Image (cartoon, rainbow, N blue to C red; front, side, top):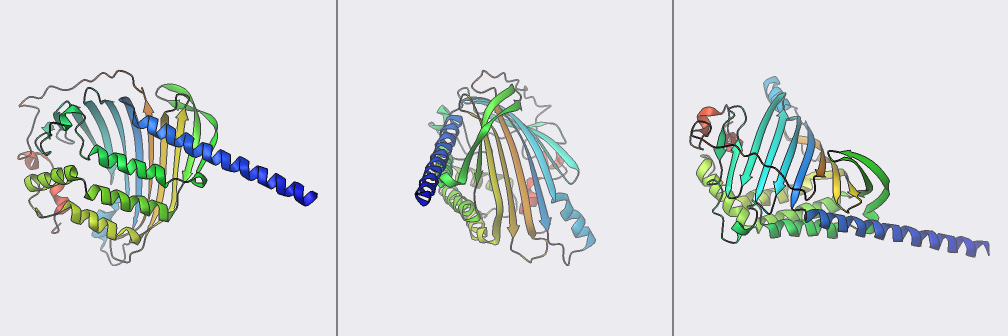
Amino acid sequence: MKKLAVAILALLMAAVLIGCSLDSLEGYKKAAEKTEQIKKGRTDGEFLLVMDFNTEGMTEEQIRELNYFKNIKGSFNTAYDDEQKKEVFRNYLSFGGIGFDYDLFINGEEIFVKLPVIGKYMRIDDIQAPITKDQKKGKAELIDPETKDAINDKWLKLLHKEDIFKGSSTVLTTPDGEVKATEYTIRLNDEQIKSLAEYSIDMLSRDEKLEERFGKYIRENVKHHKDVSLKKLLSDMKENINKYTVESFGYTAYVDIDGYIVNEIVEITLKVNSTEAAAMNGLSYKLDIKNWDINKAQKFDFPELTDENTVDIDSINQSMPFNIEVLFNDEN
């Protein structure tokens, strides 16, 4: 009788745990899908990227230059209204003790950026590939919405009931004030993360919209390596995936009483299997995002562009201390 009682108790406990896990998985999926449907609101975020490099055989000068990129941090604040096709991104990026503020504005089909250091605006409508008639009906995005949806769907399908845990309710301090929310925690392993990464790369490789815009930018704005191919870059990324080992991956989502994800925290640690000089030994990354003002009307204060406060892509190199071309220049 005692053995039977223990067996029955164990069975009941297993049933409770499975039920809890299934409830956690479905609860998170519903919240993720509902959050994707938000049409307007605000998003704040902070991130920190810490990298460790192999400095063996390098000179002091080379090590000093490499140290600029060991710690990269930033923050952003976004106000958006998808229905009006209006967005304002205010961003801050810091590395090597140097900080940059840069803002991106989207007002219908007009897209421009406020450049760091010089403080002037540059239109980037023309840098992008022409917007098709169908795209004019919605938000102009670099990546095709179908690609984004496919990757999001893969993320949700990747999750199993044992990967996610529903915690107790807590109270968060947000820009909207104190919010009661339920915590969902997800832990994934190396194999799962690589599966998501490989799938994402495959989907991006098939994205004709992304390839067209990437190609147009390279042709018009990068003097060196004009023959660089997006598919080749993505293919190289996919081949290098096995050089990385995901030591830990954690994702925490806080869902409010209305079923929206109001806070997301992502933390990942990678180890790199490489002995090359200047190669990364590993990295850690943390991203903390808050969603607020959900589906509330937004006020946008777009600056007026004039000849005095605007520069074009041809004159940008004369105004900036550096430009994006150095990233593609093997001689540097």
